[in-house]
Each structure stands twice: as C-alpha cells, then as structure tokens.
Length: 154
Image 1: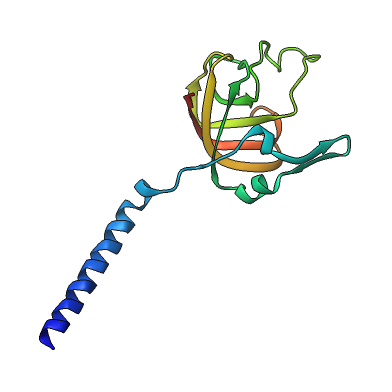
Image 2 (image 1 turned 135 degrees about the horizontal axis):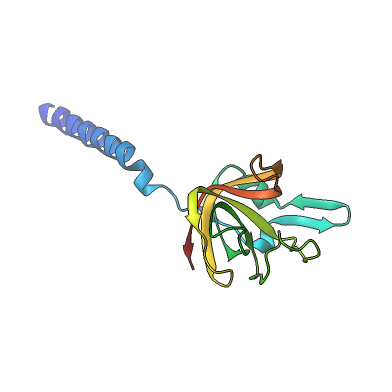
C-alpha cells in the first residue's frame, strides 16, 4: 500500500513538473504560422466586388506566412510595404496610370526596416487583418493586411 502511494505521488510530481515546464516553454513550442497564398485570398472577385476565401476569413487575427515580392517602396526604409504576387518594375504610388494588381497585401512592419530590391522574393510573417481599413499615417486603403510583421529573403 505504501509503495502504491509513493508511485502515485511520484507520478503526480512528474506530471506537475511537466506542466510547469510546458507553461514556461510554451512560446518556444508555438505552432508555425499558417501558410497562405495569393491564389487563396479570395473566394470570388469581379465587377460586383470580392469575397474573402473561407480560409482567410478563418485565419483573421492569427499569425500567417505569405511569400511574394515587395513593390518598389516610396523610400529606402519604411514601416510598411506592399507585397505582390509578381515583381513590379515601377512604383505603383508614383504613376496614376500604372496597372495595380488585384492580389496585393499591405504589410505593416513591427519597426522601420530597410527594404529589399523589388526583384527579390520575401517570406513575410505577421498577424492577418481583413476588411477595408485606411492607414491613418499614409491614407493608404487596404483590404488585406499583415501587421506586426517581419520578413526574410526567400
């Protein structure tokens, strides 16, 4: 009987220590952000407007990862940039008649960051926001945004 009690206490201690360790180390073992793609942003898009895909809607407010190209920035260092499916050769803000791709995502960085060449592919991680929003500093209107973001070269 005494042996059974000791085994139960040992099991309880091990379980509690494991739970404590998991609590302390939880962020280190956090799941990778969900990968999304430009092809999966919208369910439909046309003259009557657009509808976000079910997956994008389900991921609203969560960490995601998206691969694309930085559109040419307004300045060499910035707190935001536009991510596109294909590289652009011109600054979309500089020419009013430029064809602006439908599949863009505005990326707001955690901090002011040096931008990279428009021809370099980047992987961006950040929290997904969807729905029309106007940036108070730039006046830029977006439908899909990654906020508190960072990027690495692909």
